[in-house]
Image (tube, rainbow, N blue to C red; front, side, top):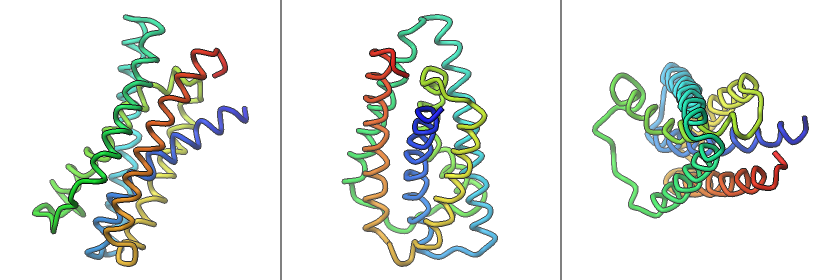
Length: 188
């Protein structure tokens, strides 16, 4: 059970860092209490929803291609992590045309931050962790990361946004490699 909890923690942390990065970006401009609640709820629902979609795709792929599906999901995590790290070195955009605290802007932001959850959802069943516990942990980590990012955004500014995205990508890439190695060695 201890190994499963560690895996759940790593997954939730990787996703939370990505959410934190976006939340810091929104928090730099300031956010009301209502906006914080809307953003935290939207981000958590997007993360959980995409994990469920990913798990569904993972089950279907597993039936079609067997064990290879797990490795494909781990490879997707690695590629997504490398992409996130690469993007963290790009220029951070100025003020957004979209209001990321409501409506279409919040939907777009929620979708963008939850795409990595699709890859993690794809691998959840192959990592052998309880789906319900993992989704609860991801939801709680997402709400916590959103709250911290929005609250600390003014102080942390662009530096933390860039580094949190890099660290989140690094954790995802390492997670993909470690989980693939554990599966190959029949340890997890």
